[in-house]
Image (cartoon, rainbow, N blue to C red; front, top):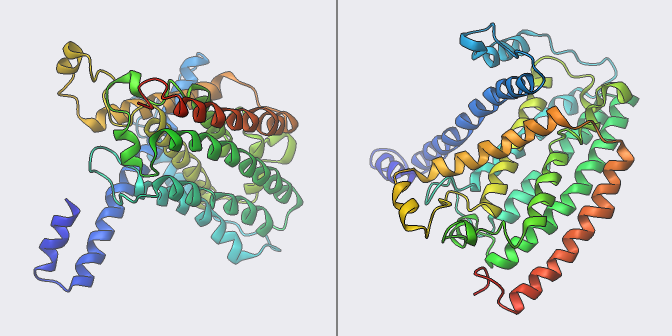
Amino acid sequence: MFDAIQAFLAGFLFDWLATLITLVLQAVAVILPIMLVVAWLTYAERKVIGFMQVRMGPNRVGPIGLLQPIADALKLMTKEVIFPAQSNKYLFIIAPILAIAPAVAAYAVIPFSEGVVVTDINAGVLYVLAVSSILVYGTIVAGWASNSKYAFLGALRGSAQKISYEIAMGFALVTVLMIAGSMNLTEIVQGQQGGVWNWYLLPLLPMFFVYFISGLAETNRTPFDVIEGEAEIVAGFHVDYSGMTFGVFMLAEYAMMILISFMTSIMFLGGWLSPFEGIPALEAMFSWVPQLAWLSIKVAFLLFVFLWLRATYPRYRYDQLMRLGWKVLIPLTIVWVFVVGAMKYFSFGPWFN
């Protein structure tokens, strides 16, 4: 579609200008829906947790509270942004950008359905890992720029947490690459064709849980939200941020939640593929469902699990969090790399035939 738009624009504009306009349209087509989903995900979170805890949740702004995210955005945009007197103002401003820019840039290689992707590069998995790893700099820079011991301690805790769980995430994805034989996200989804029994979830079930749990830690979500341990470190690395600069950190967190859900769906749950492929009656019955709808259902379920866990589990202590990452998840991923290697050698199941 975007190639056709670029070809049309090139008919009466300079080639470089047509390319630039097409790139801007691509960015808007991805970023705008993601930001809208992020906004109403905050509403969904408060509603889901309210239901689980027998509370109402937002119900005053708009019908059943649906306009609450707009009210939140207006509140953050009208609040004053305060700069600590001894802070490094340049780094103080750059830190929120370092937090949200990589979270948004990673969507450039996410395939939403067959052929619907901004950039279908062969090293898509490597790109997502590389870009998302930059997020830790937003945490470190924010804690350092505030010139506050509380924020700095929160940044140290947060950066150690993110780096630790990135290792487990990387090893979990290695097992997917061993089965798929490709780093291209579209080819990884296509390798799971044939119904739910051909999804990589079955041979990689432990890695599915490792990746998702690591995603909870990467996004500072309960039970791994020690970065925001209000009773311990006064809200962590962003304690000195206010107004929209604080809001950008929250946007980055929710954008990463959605990204982790997309990656989990693509890597383990067949992406946009229907679970009823290969079952004649059900495949024909659900053939009208768009590919994007299947992917959206899987992503929505995983996001619900994010919210469910927040309403259920208490926060881990920091030593428990690090012990889980280094002594449980990372050794498990290393063992499963050898297990997948053995399954591949012996042509086990439909995944290696």
